[in-house]
Amino acid sequence: MENLKDIPLFSSLSQDDGERYGKSCLWKDYDAHELVIDIDEETTDVRFVISGLVRVINRFSVGKEVILNEMNPGDFFGELAAIDGETRSANVTTLYRSRICIVPQKLFLDILNRSPEISLSVMQVLTKRIRTLNMRLAEQSFLQAKHRLYAELLRLSKPRLGAEGQRSISPPPTQKELAERIGTRREVVSRELNALQKQGFFEKTRGALVIKDVSELQRRISEAWEE
Image (cartoon, rainbow, N blue to C red; front, top):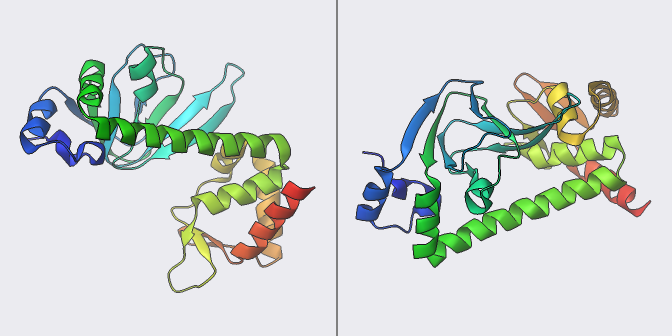
């Protein structure tokens, strides 16, 4: 039986409440690259990633796309529409086969009203997202594309096992995906990655992108902010 308590946000629920609430939710499986939510879709449910990975994309009428975020197990989306009742502001698609728990708006808001602890957790998640968006907006406004690329590579990366001072991104994003994350053209990303590779600061391996000199990228970003 699906239990809402198994979702990190709702871990403070009692076992009985978790089972009872879980019965009112829809637990749905999606194939890889399947649309979960379309932009402007008139639904106010909140969706929680149980397994898999989904990508949040903002599509514009001129045909351009911006990758806003990727959601891992435990993450949730749709809370803004549940709170203010407005239409969706982004498109969500699975990257891998994923399982999603769909929590009706009324149930979500009832839980928040009953549990100040869960309400605070939602506010903390929203605050973190706002801070991240503010930083990306500042980067878009004041940094050149190459410096935005350095910052995005660092954000996406994790420490590389057995290689102190290095970080890696696995699975590696495509150049097109990186371009959509920082609001530039694929050709710009290709040029800058090739330059980093020739300078010895970056490496493409099978299944990963490797940042060989993290401090150098951080130094370049810091200098760019000071210009």
